Image (cartoon, rainbow, N blue to C red; front, top):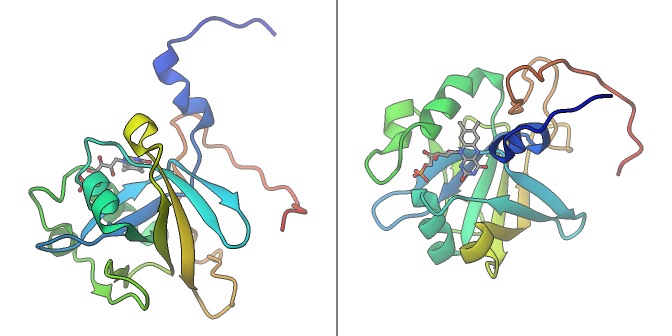
Length: 179
Ligand SMILES: Cc1cc2nc3c(=O)[nH]c(=O)nc-3n(C[C@H](O)[C@H](O)[C@H](O)COP(=O)(O)O)c2cc1C
């Protein structure tokens, strides 16, 4: 197969993962929410998750200082609000008020959970040693809240959101033997 060099700045479009989650952090004035999709599982149990939060984002400092967050999994109905939350900053805007998102208290930590999301994970920051250099935080999920299936899974009626780079949106489904 013949190949041509392409800009290094486009490499992410081949490799970036999903799904899209809403990261909620606690703040002095109010909590904040931002969508994100650069995340990866690092361990099954206890569940460890690596997330990349840009230092330009207000959420970076709130997570680094508060050392806790919730990861909330939205479904397709929330797509507009999700993108809206990604196009403004909690530095200037109360995104909950602007996008009609409501919260409920978490069981184990200060950052609240998003009511409209079908699953919410309460996470503790366990390693920020690579945050300054790579914007990478390691979280441990300490409480997982999901739907009545007991798996926290979305269903066909309300699928979750995946960030797919434009032009790569064909879907295939394969059986998996993963845990
Ligand atoms: C679908 C989607 C995925 C995103 N993924 C990330 C991500 O993985 N990491 C990140 O730092 N920003 C990501 N962003 C951008 C932030 O959400 C955006 O910069 C936001 O305004 C930051 O809000 P804050 O300043 O209130 O923290 C994403 C945005 C969208 C819409």
